[in-house]
Length: 227
Image 1 (spheres, rainbow, N blue to C red):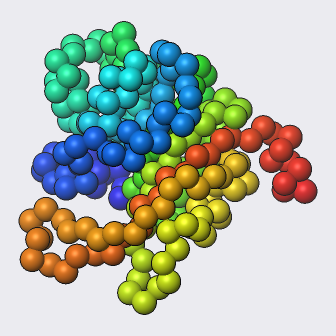
Image 2 (cartoon, rainbow, N blue to C red):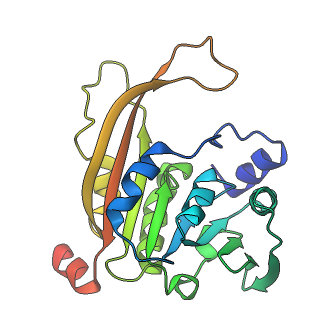
């Protein structure tokens, strides 16, 4: 989805993608990162996700990036927080003691804003981009993060009818996009079905939910792999 369409979706309140409860896979697998207290967590394309509120309840500090000011304002309002705002390059920084959300284009975010990030929670942010932008999204993420920074990646796949179940296999797209810049470990995979709000009468769509643990590679590791 383009930045323009994303903003339009929030302006029209067409946000079926917004989850109304904390993701249970986050709650199950986040402790496996064994992060220190007061860890700073980056959440790309964060919206007003309830998952961020849960991370705050786990004593994390948050850094997010989000194109829609409506979503950013809604997150702070739901938490009864009054942020300060300031211009930072092409982005607007909304911040409190525990939360920084940069409002603007993800690709305008610089490594200085994430220099002390401890981990990343990525709930299918890559999938919000069209196929042509996904490699750019992953490359930019790798360039932003400190070496060996862990990324808990939750992805949702929609296999075609007749495809074999691959719940316990790393997706080919994940390998193609991430393996050069990240190590990849599949922590969890499960098949299921989903219906969308307002379309309960439609046939349920087959899904595959997967949880990956990624870690950024150092420049030497990337050079050796390319060679």
